[in-house]
Length: 171
Ligand SMILES: [Zn+2]
Image (cartoon, rainbow, N blue to C red; front, side, top):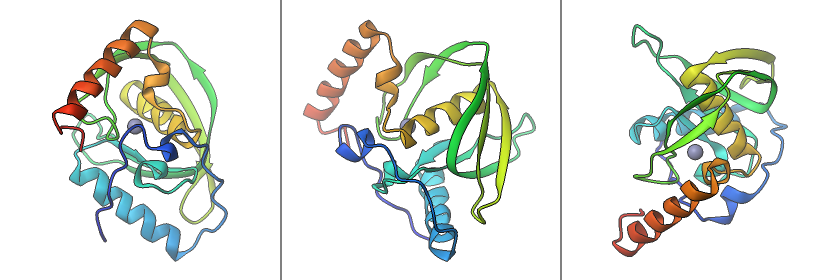
């Protein structure tokens, strides 16, 4: 396993729609393992393939349960098939180091996708898991969380990003 370099905003790959995953073999398993390692090393709860420079519809996540137990999930070709409710909370992104912004998301989301073997499955998520699934599926669609902010928060975020870039803290 290896840790991969995390791509930072505004790299074009973050704004590109990922290609569907078509091959479910050792190469995909390797990529998924490396993505998990990269995510854990960066202390994130989710990481999408475009964030490591791979323009594919794939993400990994690990939102621990209430007992603090790990819950590793990898999803290829995710589709959000149902959403309901709403939640507003601070959200971060490994491609936006040091930035935590309030974002409105659905409280519940059901995602359909394929595991590393290509088997289709559905996942019913709430709260942080739903936030994570929606955020990571967005990455697969070339959407970053900046695109989900209110105009006011987006302008504030962009100013903060500029400051971080100038002081060399955007790496
Ligand atoms: Zn992200």
